[in-house]
Image (tube, rainbow, N blue to C red; front, side):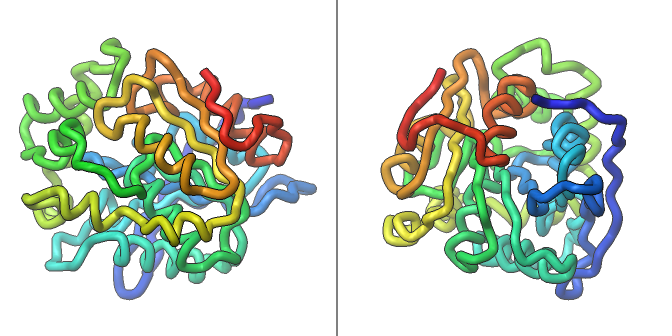
Length: 293
């Protein structure tokens, strides 16, 4: 059962391998809490931050455990604008170094879109690190570049482009407000964010999908329980991506939400938490390989 608590997530800066990294860290959990820390990894939308991705669920999840939500390398408060190599290796290494710096040697993880691919990459790189994995609208498996994802990655800062990209993310058109469009546009125009974004996904963009994909052997070797959550109407990463992961991961179950796009945790917050919280506490009874609607 989800319990809303009065927590306003705030970020601090931690130096990770010479990069000033913005991270929300809710700190020690309430007395008696036994769950490991929970790492939240956002996706690759323009102007994204950990707060923008996870603001609706951090207050709930932090009621019972420590929650760690970084701006990934090149995004938000971690963007420097300096010349840098991006990709799965860089994002994975940065996340591992962050957890090492924070003294975390065991965690659960929720990864959104690109963040899902990095969650899987963490499991492949350091199998003992992760206990349970939640993937939401996830990449991480070989597939053709989706048209919607290509549309996201070709974003160039403008109000019109911001509205177009948010329209790809959201199934519920009421979410596409002028305030949200303006906020994401302004976030994408910070010089360090703008310059980092320009370096991340230049064409041909299929190579970035390929870079984020784990091999079949890597996925077969991930033995942690995995929950796949996907919006049926996702235009950015179609739910066939989760279906492919379901076939390759040894211990996986899938939950599909009709009338939902790429922003499952924002569009369907209560439904998202209703399936994720029991899974993370080990109370979920959904059978491996079962797709729920």
